[in-house]
Length: 165
Image 1 (cartoon, rainbow, N blue to C red):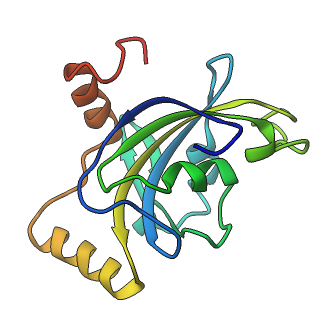
Image 2: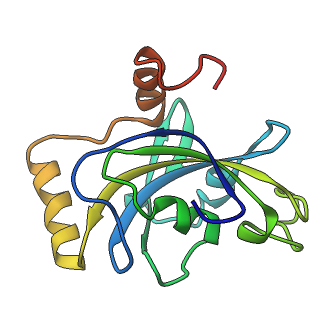
């Protein structure tokens, strides 16, 4: 792991590991180090296209898509996604210099905040065409992604996630 990231929990996915140049779709939950969840998905729900938004437990969840290596997201997320496999999960503690640093996000994340990130890698492709084809194949086979809560419950049942998490 990158300096400034501490791996707290990990569950392997399947397939090859994600690397620079790969297009990935992931879900993210952010918590302040003291445990308060940052409602980032709720804050972005009105700005995100409906195709990238779904509801889980009455809350919006954003399916985020980036290309690794292009610095499209905070460094902590990109470093955490690198090496993950599709369906995998990581929980990491991120130092401020790999997160939102001195500026924070007014009203959501204080300046110089240490963050706890929960990241689920939903889809992985080495180019846009393969990515689109993988999504189309899943939809045609009626394979919806598991909800974040379903993944959390499965991990708890397998003893890979503590009951308090």
